[in-house]
Length: 264
Image (cartoon, rainbow, N blue to C red):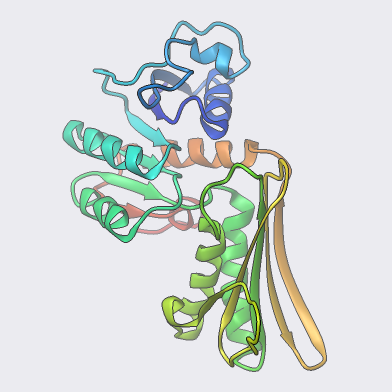
């Protein structure tokens, strides 16, 4: 049994990860934490996950040392639990998005001491899509305009999504572009398309789990590559898969590409 610590335990992703871990036979959740003031504090993790009583209450701190830590919280909380894991020498899987450059730098710095998987999207399908869009960008060449569109639920805080940014950066990496120089976030007024730019568009609708589409278009055709998540299970499965893969790895910063396709 792999012992798991879970931060963001009361969130939508935290609950699904907990449910799949509880219902499976490979994992044992020994710590479930939420931010101070959370309405989930003191509640049974199993009840929150919809599995019935589990015997572990959600807390704002823990003295337990799990085999691996999974974080789906908020950026400020992620940095706190990152330092916690670094101090204990515990590997960490991070699915939190919307981080600032300094927070991302903190992740990279911690990865010198502990193994860290940091991925904006844990879905197997999305990580296949990351490879496909890079290949398509190289093959189609510079004559094709590129647009990235994503749709998520109304409660999502960051826009565009971390996955949309990762898709655009995958294209940039394959074509020698700089994301910061070519990304255009929506359009308004007089804004004719510049050659080489990548349009980034975010929609927030109801309870949409997650949809991502990359368009390649020129004079005569459009190539469309996309992914739709039907529920959060694909992300939860990916997070647990990453946690299992990470145990025993040397210190370093890993991605889901490493987890799924081999790497460092």
